[in-house]
Length: 379
Ligand code: PLP
Image 1 (cartoon, rainbow, N blue to C red):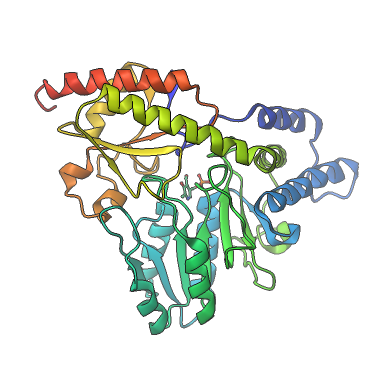
Image 2 (tube, rainbow, N blue to C red; image 1 turned 135 degrees about the horizontal axis):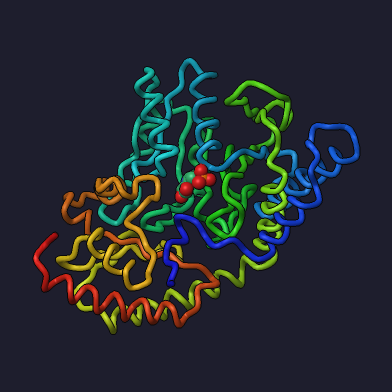
């Protein structure tokens, strides 16, 4: 099979799998226990923390381990709303549902919010944020890279503006890891939320990286793990996998980017050769190298995905969290496309380990399937 859904989740790296198996078979203690088994588990968790910190240019004490980016996003946003009577939260209209739905829920609870609009390429409307900051926005949430269209947002420039007003800047860095350089310290970020499973790490573990001096309040009540910031017994095998993923990122991140560039160029050339009539969506000038959001003329995205699945290709139409709902993507709708046009979007996302030959074959299959669907009456 040809797996083109890396933005939903990536295949686990061999080093990650090995580290998790070793931890599962060799480290059974509870990281909070004081005996030797407990200390061994604690060591795994602390190594993971240091590796995450090292991979994103932050000190180890800045990293709080969580159960993934969804939890991290909820924690940062809900903490802010809880602690600030004057909370005024701004997020982009193209955020992942774990941000967007959380902000909507807070809005229903009475928190003042605003949604940063985008243009037809998914670029943030210029000047809009300045007005919200002038109105007293207290937290701004912008993803580093979008999961559906791959747009990369200029978080360093946005962060500078936000910092100048004293508002809090939150960045969801989940899709950026392993694809573009991610430097926490250089980008005026207050809270960065992360998950490593889009680049070969384990699912179900993530992090909040925090600027020095800012607090992280627990979402749940219970134990004192993560210095009271994230109660619950630590997932030691996942932490072992997280450490391995973060180490691979630090070591190989640059070569992954080169591999992605080669693959993107070859894949685009093959698509142009094999398929007539398609449009690339998103900001193709500032886009993750591994992500193509493609709309094939006259072809419904779901019909295409079902047909190529039978031919051995796994891809999706957008966020895995909304896949299957038949609702068009909120991202493509926010870019101003009508529902029917939005439903034509197909997301093809790959990784540095995707064999080039598979991308060439995928282009041939897509060409043949698109041709066939165009001659068939709509389902
Ligand atoms: N943020 C973005 C941009 C994502 O693409 C995802 C993907 O699932 C998430 C957050 C949620 O991460 P997790 O699966 O770790 O909850």
